[in-house]
Amino acid sequence: EAGVAQSPRYKIIEKRQSVAFWCNPISGHATLYWYQQILGQGPKLLIQFQNNGVVDDSQLPKDRFSAERLKGVDSTLKIQPAKLEDSAVYLCASSPGLAGSDQYFGPGTRLTVT
Amino acid sequence: GENVEQHPSTLSVQEGDSAVIKCTYSDSASNYFPWYKQELGKRPQLIIDIRSNVGEKKDQRIAVTLNKTAKHFSLHITETQPEDSAVYFCAATTFGNEKLTFGTGTRLTIIP
Image (cartoon, rainbow over all chains, first blue to last red; front, side, top):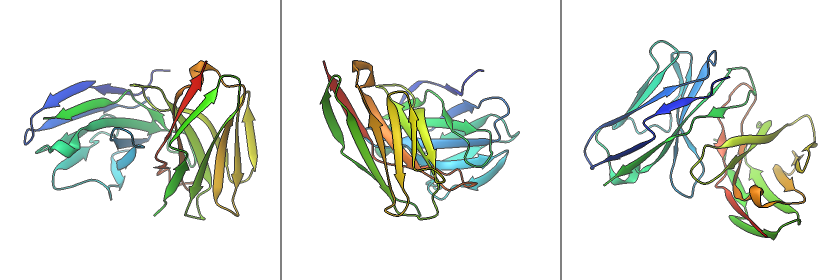
């Protein structure tokens, strides 16, 4: 079974620039998550999709972050404009969508904002 | 919302000894508690989980215990090996919610 795919793996941008991350979840997984993991901390949920609908985006800084999952499969997360404090690893995870099912993480995108 | 606290933040144990990591949660409705292992520069990987209808679960050298009354759960690693060195995260969520709240992590170092 192929895992969760993410790209790019690394990205360096200057503050105020824009950046986009892509995630392809495990085939058939209805639920997709984007997490932000700042160095030395646990992952923090940014947004959760169930198919192509948003379930929870309460911790997404909506003035600069946006995400979409138009066809209920792949997802993109965008930051515009980036700030220094956005430097982190952005993890995508997916789960089958059944109650209590396990989440499987992608390798992450390490973003450095200079 | 849920709040998960994890202790200790760092832990060093001699190879072969046991390691214990503890977490507490705030939402009494939480009923699913996974543990993730994250090696340096790699993705978090699920190593064991426990649901609220059991008090203990074991998988080879790893075990997890849950005390719902006290709202805490613990990870136990016995006969530790160098490859156990990593950061471990606990998490909590409610059945049907699937929104994981993670602890702050424990950096475990196994001393050869």
